Length: 131
Image (tube, rainbow, N blue to C red; front, side, top):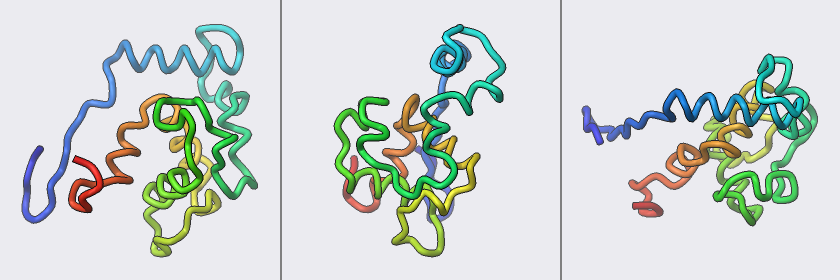
């Protein structure tokens, strides 16, 4: 934990090179059935892509089981994750339409493969909800 000025910042490496390679392989396997592929072409063929476009709400049925965080998620948790991820002026909004397609894809991939940053962002320690 680093304290600079009035804001505390937590630094964490998101993953080793091996973990990033495993993530790439997992995306390729989901999209093509093969462990290696062109990731830019593969992502639109995954279950993450079906939540892009006109989908307005992140629902439990869409993400259930993707990671431990969303093993059996209540709608309130998903709304909070999206609302805190968006960080728009309308802080009450939890609609996916507030995200660009690339931001939405990043949110979904993070939710599936490395949800810890979403948890830290959604339940900051200064609000007394996480320790």
